[in-house]
Structure formats: structure tokens, C-alpha cells
Image (cartoon, rainbow, N blue to C red; front, side, top):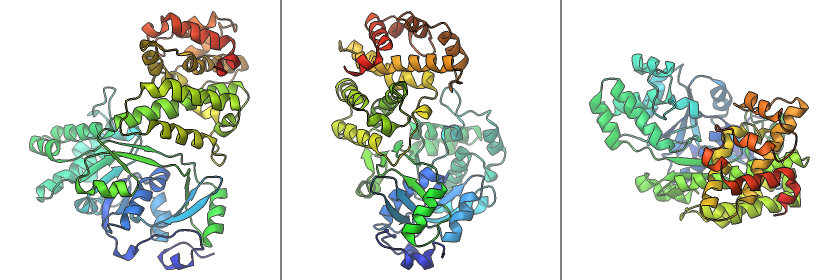
Length: 475
């Protein structure tokens, strides 16, 4: 079968949507580091929409080390299919990626594109920022040490941005706008500080001051479930297109990109493409953490206790679906101060996403690393609810279900995927299913803050749910 390419676009079968603009007229204006599946399902989709309005926002995708994406996409002129995993699936062809470069093979070509860029975006994962425990740039990190010594052959995101900005300043060019798209709180602020610190560590105080004062690093928040590409997706896309695609991408229909309002004149265009341009990103992050992630963890532990395997299966259980909705609307929503977010509507969207039968999201995976996640997803909310004099019984249900999960896994000899796995197993081995188990868990200061662990109302609520989870789910 013919392979997807510019020359084959006219053969794409209806109702698949092809790019709504002339690709030959587009120009690179965005350099993206880390063109994995999420970027191609998310930011590239948004820029694809913007290209119909501004042909100067095509993407040069930069892989820092591996050629896989370049080898797959450039044989297709950068084109690929995006499939929406829903009960009524849809497929479209994305044309925003005009070029893919491998930084380690051709750094000069990457710097040339960075000289032309209006925007630099990145999805390199949290570890790609080379930050220390305090959230600042780790100057002892091996990649940072390399880039300080060899700025023209950078290997880190920070090194690339700093050297590119140094070259633009030397050439009399204004800085580009850098948008971090990784799941890192205050990602723009942290990246900005890291690049400034890197420039100062190079001994270039004037460059550091210029970046500090002139370069925009808006924070952003991204969201959309993006399952890995598999042979079933390739077959689905081939059938839909009537063409072969070496690397199609899939995601749920819901997609969210919140960007801090540091986009200048382009802000309105971003908004027309569906981006939420906000004064602050933190309220959106908090809402996602407490509503989506908090409900996810609660569904995982309670759902596993009731014999379910996936989020969609748990949501098909009226006890669980009703419980998490009441928790979100009555307990979590009042703790949020998000004037730019329609919280009731967002809750409805989250619940609809949870029910999506086309996304196979295993509860066992969501249950990983509970000792690290509970504080941010549930316990901080519990503290605020109790401080406001309200009941935390439903929130305590998720905490109790986590304790039951740890005890159940340990008794069955199933390894717990958690940084505190050995300590959790030690606690679980002392448990007998009685209310006395709860204080043993609450004594874990790495999970529970001492003030919350000592709170009588919280202790009672967790103990009640631990002894009878099904009764707790009826509340």
C-alpha cells in the first residue's frame, strides 16, 4: 500500500481530515525538543490548527539523541495520523511537523533553526531539566558539566536553550519564547531560572542578565491520555487512510493546554486554536491534581478492592462512580480557587474521560507509588477540608483503600511498586484487618504529616472506611 506523504495526501479517504492549509507555504517558527508521542498528539495538534491562520508556525522537531522519529516521519514528509480513542473514533492527518533533526548528529542545523524560532517548546520529562532536590539547576549534573565545557555540542535542554539565546543576543536578535510542556509545577519559572543560572555559570553575567530580563518562559500545563502506538492502531489507521503510516499516534478526544499569558500578540491566536491562555497556571494544576489525579487514585484503590481492573470498569460500577463524583463536587471543588476555570464543567469532563471504554487504563498502574502521590492528590485536600470544619469522610475512603491495598498485596506476596515498598511491607505484615492497623500506617511520616496523623477526626474517618469500605462508598 502507498505510504503517507505530501504526494499521497489527495488519496486520503473521507472522512479523515487532512491539513487545512498549504504545507508548501509553511515556514519553521517552532523548535520542539523531545518529539515523542505526547508532543505529536498534543502541541503539534494545536500548531496544526494555528497554521491555517499563521503559516510561520511549522515545527522543527528535535530529537536530542535517537533517530527513530526522524527516520519514520521524514520518509512521510513529516506527516502522520492522529486517532482519537473514543466510542466514535476519528482520524486526522497532522501536518505541522515540517522537519525532524537529531541534535547529536547535526547541531549546526539545530542552531540554525533556533535562530529562526519564535517559540521553543519541550517535552523531555522532568529529569531532562537537570534540577537538584531544591528545584534549581544541578551544576554538577554530568550533562550540565558537558554543556558548560562544550556549548556548541549541547546534550541538555538547558544547554541548548542557553547557547541558542547567547547566539541570538550576539546577532542582535530578540529572544524566542520558551514553553515547557512537561509535568513539572512552575515549569516555566524553573526552566527560566535554570537557563539564567547556566549562563552565569559560563561566566557570562551580561548574558544571564539579558535572559533574566528579556526572555519569556511562560509556565504551562498539559493533559491528554496518549496510549502507546501498537499494531492495532497501525491497522486502524491504514484502513481509515487507505495509506500506510509508519508511526501513527492515538489519544483520547479530550486535550488541554494551559499557557501563562506571556505570548504577546499571539495570545489570541493560541486561544482560537483551543489553548487556555491564563493569568496563572497554578490553579489549573491544582485542579488537575486534586480532581483528576485525586479521583484516579481513589478509583484505583477502591476499584481494585471491588475486583475491577480498569478505570472504565470501575466507573461502570454505580457505587464507585457516584462516590467519586460526590467527592469531587462536594469535598474537593470547594478547596479550589480557580476563577479562570469552570470547575463544575471540568468535573463533568473528567468523569466523561474516566468512562471512555476505548482507553484501557489499568487501576494497578495508577496504584503505583501511592506513598508519594497521596500527599498531593488527597492529603493536602483533607487538611484544608478539616481546617474549614467540614467532613473528610469521603476523602478518607481513598486513603483507607490504599492501606487495604498495601495489606492485600503484601499478604498475597505481590511486590509493591513504591519507593517505600520495603517499609510498607513491614507495616502490612503487622496488620490483622482491625482498626489497630490504621495508626501503624499513620505513623509513616514520609506519607502523613504528624499534625494530620494526630487529627482525631481524620483517624476516625480512615478507621471507619478501613473496616467497611463498601459502607464508606455509600456516603
